[in-house]
Length: 98
Image (cartoon, rainbow, N blue to C red; front, side, top):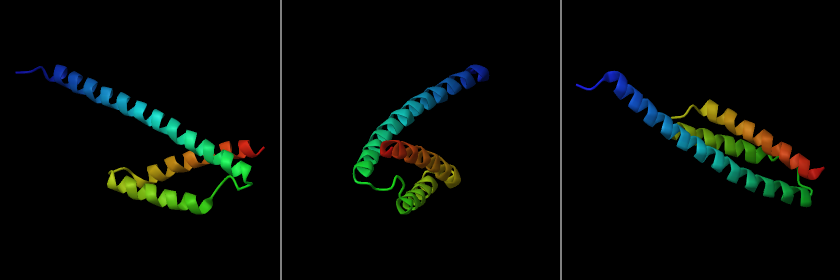
């Protein structure tokens, strides 16, 4: 019979390795996303467009909430996360316009 503590330790290690890989994916994905939003910010600044687009933000939040439900993720968490990202992007866009 297997040692349950050793089995639990092995499973814990495996889960943590998966979490670490997923964290890396999130960081690189966010980095790629911000490269694009920075390009958008430069375009907006060049063409005197406002740093925020409330209609698009509303659409994106609804889309992300839908995706969250499909992924069995709390839609409120997804909305809060996207709102945080949007605010960060808007701050970057405002810097380009200064």
